[in-house]
Length: 206
Image (cartoon, rainbow, N blue to C red; front, top):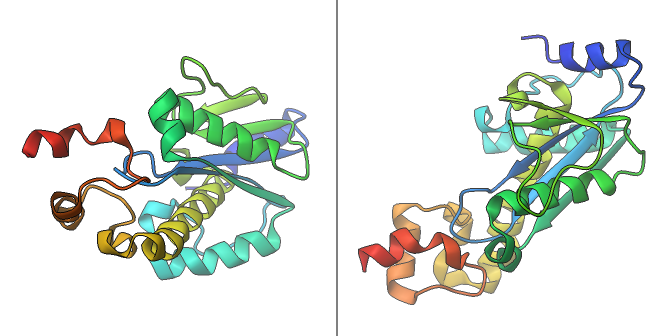
């Protein structure tokens, strides 16, 4: 797959600056949802660049360093668990993605958004944009954003939240609904970074 085909088409259409946008952590029971926006130099060589889900943790960390060094601009944003419970996960994803775009030091002419959604009931992508289903495996810019969002969230959960709430062992599962996480919930109950609206499955098991 040529990861530059979408960007190339937009440059040819007169979009001088194109950013890729993706999020990480929509599904976990705990922690924030993260989003990243990235503007890469045209046709930048980033060996191994791909959808973050297809890469090992070690490779993602390596690419994070390379992407942030090479990018013309990059930005990471998030919506915390309280906000997710307040406005729902779709709106929180849109809020985080638009906040990431707004945080770029260079204003993009167009944003390439991973997925097929660009709005919720109360929040939407307001920057000119196009959505690309499975874009993290089709667009270099979105792939780069997927890596920055995933690594940033994993670091936050594995370091800061694991230290704040060691009994839940967030370094192991990053807040996802694993067997271990459910066992910790059974033992300790929810903590302040659990998404209350995501705990129905756990509550049904009690």
